[in-house]
Amino acid sequence: MPKLLIAFFLLYVTGLSAQNKPNIILIMADDLGWGDVGYNGNQLIQTPHLDQMAKDGITFNRFYSASAVCSPTRASVLTGRNSYRTGVFTANKGILRKEELTIPELLKEEGYTSGHFGKWHLGTLTTAVKDANRGRPNNMKEYNPPSWHGYDEAFVTESKVPTYDPMKKPVDGASRLGWDYLKEGQAYKSYGTHYWDFDGNIVSNNLEGDDSRVIMDRVLPFIDKALEKEQPFCAVVWFHTPHLPCVAGPKYQALYKEQPKMIRNYAGCVTAMDEQIGRLRKYLLKHGIGGNTMIWFCSDNGPENNSTGTTGGFKARKRSLYEGGVRVPGLLVWPDKVKEGFAIDAPAVTSDYLPTIMDALDIKSKKVPYILDGESLMPTIEGKAQKGLRQSVFAYEICLVRQICAINSTNVMGTMSCMIC
Image (tube, rainbow, N blue to C red):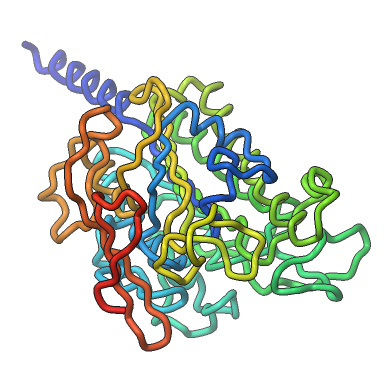
């Protein structure tokens, strides 16, 4: 065969392979309880798009965050490992080590482009100005932006922000729990947190209104660019909702006008986030890529202790390794693989994302130079029988006490057996 024909053949095969690789979207809510969604029985909070995902895809009835607080769970998502291995010990303590192999780094070798949007919370984003929880001038020790972990694009905050007008805080009437949305002419001040781009610049445009919409306004152009390049993509979308302070805009407050202020703002911001997830799915279908895109959804831990979020009746809340602290909503839609929706009771955990993606793309395990704590969920996705016994380990550090608990798949109620605490 002439060399020119061989070259064209290889280009064709490579292009075909790229088209067949699934796009990957990892969505995470912040402090959303297992019982805060309609498909898990919530009668108040309107989540029609998440409910539709549950009908269309896989509902993991026993999906767990790898920790009872935010940052360690996020580290588990990107690495497939328990957070104690990665250098992220609890919220605002430790950073995701450069040495850890992340999903974006693995996917880059497969021809993917990756972007991170929303909350980061795996290190600081500046060494020049005071920002959020830990960012401050000359603080190199905790500086750890997404650009160091395989991403090609980013629009991120270090940590929490108000869920409406995310850069603003009213001069009067502000509470740690939240407040009613700012009215025209109402005095406000900076919340003290910035959005940062991939190159470490403060973003100042299109930051008003619902924070989930502000985030999605960056996700869709990222996907546009990937489509233009005919490149498979991975979008990590970590919403701030419904982490305190909860603030809902007028449209969403009106849906819950008969409720007390805290519930109006909590439920309203969850519905606003749900609407953006629906916007994303509609966009994917419009562009003909809905079928070959896997969309995962979960929360980073259970609901905050003094929020109006609900665990659906499970014991305890955020910062606890009881069910209410770590059992969270878990969904997957991937129409090309999951033709009809179904629910499963076998446990799954955020550490399972990376090994599942590796399995889906046939990435050899030898590419990961260390132990993974997650397991591939591809057998579940393909409708095959689940393995028998499985044990997942969760870690959470509070004060000077290190807690490690384990759950195994034979316990239907999911009660955790504590190994240390």
